Structure formats: structure tokens, C-alpha cells
Length: 461
Image (cartoon, rainbow, N blue to C red; front, top):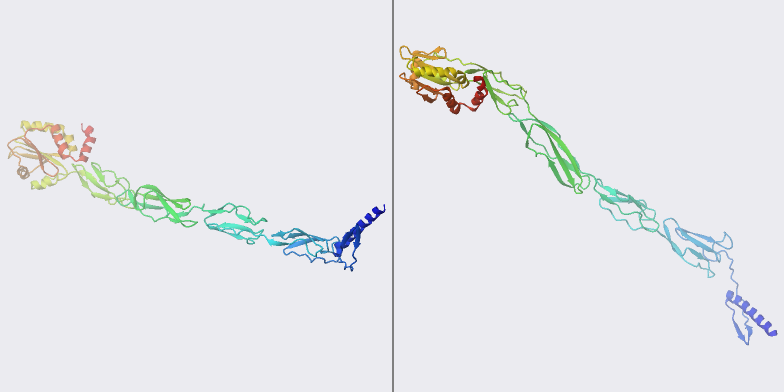
């Protein structure tokens, strides 16, 4: 029993020594035969753990320390005080977020606030950006593109708390077509004597709204300086830039043909015209049948005003003058007007003459169509007769005609002269109308005269 009491007392002494040792560090113990020997040392000064500033005042730049002391809100750095550390907006806490004031008069940890920043944004081709706070957290960078480009992607990015930019990097693309302006539309009058007009124009004005580069300009339609026919013609240009954007424009070329009223051919005549017949600058020539003569101007011109110059010509029956003293003068009045068929016979009772007269009477319509005038030289002096239709020739003129054309009085013969007075055919016997007309149609008629004969053939038959 006594032994147990001694052990209990020894245990209590050790606990008291431990408490003293923790506070001053001067306590030690040694055991000898289960007995405790306590060395007596001078008492140490007891620290005052309750002083208000046991640790230094905790402050964090660009942040805040929220502290709690066991002694109340008026104490911020007493022993055992705990502080929660945080940073202002845009700053990140580096270190411990919570510290405690230790017995060593130091805080249990260290922390500071570092400003949150993102990487510098790269420049974008054909565009730029502007940031509100540089590269700091919360900064907003707005992207814009150069004129002619449009943004594709995020139009702005924000520096976030993790130091990364929101969204993705946009691009500036050329979506705008180039600007093109065509030459103005124009109207031109066809050139004199033509149904076309040569038109010139300049190149279109082309400008790219982005980088100013135009890769190609295509034209649809004739090139400048072309000959344009009457009517409206659309010319279209299309321009392409580097991004294959395109823009088109067009203009109209209108060619007008000034025209005069269509001329009516004269009675017993016809008209031949150049170009289209009644367009500006065209000339029309009046022609009369071989048995008629033109009265009035030979040519008329269509003027720019749309009116014909001069007055219309008429065709009047040809007046044959038999009161001439020479064969040359007599033949000249038929030049380029009529053909002559000269019949010579020794007498009016000649059998060949009678047969020929009968054949020509039945072919009178065909002779008129072919502009053939019959001249008869019948008989011998002093009873010789010369006549054209109902007009009588003088004896001197008859003789001169015989000598000029070498027409004998001794026997029947027929001489055919063309419009130029050239001896084209001679017949020693009467000729039929078919034989005569076949020769004339084959060798003496122009294409226009042939067309008139064909047109009037039924009327004649």
C-alpha cells in the first residue's frame, strides 16, 4: 500500500515538471531507484501570451486578411489568432490561404497577391483589336477588321481568372465584292449609207474595298470599236478580287438608223437604191423604161433629217425626133434607152416583108417589154418610105441610115441594134418572135430587165 502511494506521487511530480518544462525549458528530471529528484533552479520570467500584438500586424498588398482572435474582434494578432487571406479582383493568392499566429511570434505561413494576366493576343491579319485593361484579368479586347473585310468568329475576348482568354481567335475575311462602274449607256446614229455604227468606250472603273487587288475583269459582248448593227446591245463587265468575290455592271449601246419614207417608183419606171434603200445616206436613182424618158433629177439622197433631197422624177413617153439631118443624131436619141430593129425590103409587096410584118404585129407586146423600136425602110427611090411607128423619115435620113448601117435596098434583111447602137444580129429571112426574143433575152437584156419581162410575161401573153 505504501509502495502504491509513492508511485502515484512520483507520477504527479512528473506531470508538474512537464508543464513547467514546456513553459520555461528549465525543467529536467532524473530517477534513482524509482525516486524523483527535482533540481531546484531560479524561476524564469513567464511570457505574457495575452498581449494584443503577439505577431506583427498581418497585411497583404492588393488583398485582405480576415482575422479572428479568441479574445474578440478587437484583437488581430494575439497568440492563436487565425487569418483567412484573399486577393482583390484581378489578383491571385500565392501561398497559404489561412495562417495562425504561433508561439514563436510568427505567422504559420506566407502568402501574397499576384496580378492575374493573360498572354499577349497575337495580331490578326487584315484587322486589329483594342483592350480595355491591357492583358490584365477582366480586360476585354474588341476586334475590328480593316475596310473591305468582315470578322468571322468571336468579336471580343475577355482575360479570365485562370489567365486564359475566353473564346477563340477570329479571322478577317474578304467578303465584300469589288466596286465596279461601267461607262454610261449611249445612243449612236448609224453612219451614212450604213446600217451599223462603230462605237468606242473606255474601261470600267474598278476598285477593291479590301486590299485593292483586282485579279481579272471579264467582258461579255463586243469589244470597243466594234461595228454594231441597228438595235440595243448590252455590254457587261465582271470584276474579281483575290478572294474570288465578284461584281458586275452593264450598260446599253443603242444604234439608230435614220430613215426616209420609202420612195415609190415612177409610172413606167423603177428605182435602184444603195444600202437599205431608205436609210440615212442612201442614194436612189430613177430609171425609166426604154420607151420612156426621165423628167427630173436622176438621184435623190436620204438626209439626216429623214427627208429626201430634191423632188421625185417622172417617166414620160419617149419623143422620137425624126426631123434630123444625120443618122448619128437620129441614133443618139436612142442611146441607152431603146434597141432598134430595122427592117429593109425592096417593096411593100415583098413576101418576106409581109411575113415579117405579121410576126412583129403579134409580138408587139414583147417588143415593148424589151424596149425595141421598129424602123422600116421599104421600097426604092423615088417611092422609098421610111417610118418609125407613125412618123415618116426624110429621104436624106433614110439614105444616111442605109449607108451608116450598110443596109441594101436589093433584098430583104433585118438588122438588130442594141442600146449602144452596136450591130448585134442580121437576118436575111423573116425571123419568128420566139427566135428574136430568145436572142434578145440571152444577149441583150440586163438582169433587171429580165426580171421585169418575167413579171409581165403573163400580161403580155
